[in-house]
Amino acid sequence: MQALIAYDTQSGHTRQAAQAIAEAVRAQGGEANVKYVRQVEAADVQAADVLFVGTWAHGLFVINVHPAGAADWVPTLPPLTNKPVGVFCTYLLTPRGLLKDLGKMLEGRGAVVKGARKFHQNQPGKNAEAFVREVLSAAGLAGK
Image (cartoon, rainbow, N blue to C red; front, side, top):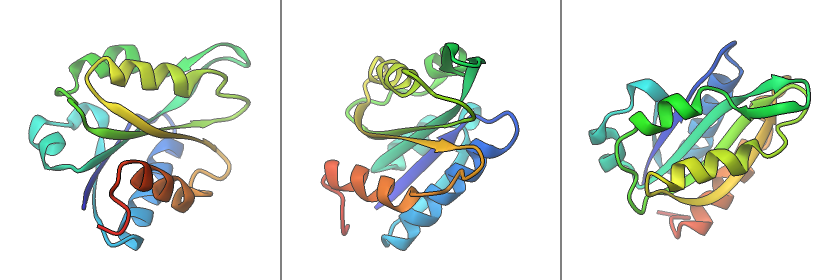
């Protein structure tokens, strides 16, 4: 099983979460390719059995919280037709509806969202294993 973990980051927390997700994929016996979201190419998506896509929470404390930069980079992603995806974010205070919003954006590119997880920026990899198991199980890829 091949996973692509694509992330956008400002201060490195989301990259740390992406690396933790990659380690969890490898612990499940899979292969993981970690890339900055703006460097994802069609071949990366085609080679992946599952994608994990994440960004950081942007907003004024709890007002207007949204997936940072996603409105700019999601449209530049290659088609995600029927690809199972786990969405994730890092946050300081609250991600509010960020994961739902990011999921809808990716579904607009053809993805099928199989799970979502928020990671506090002080513990960006906490529970990455459970998130990966959840997404792989929902995608029918557990143990493959």
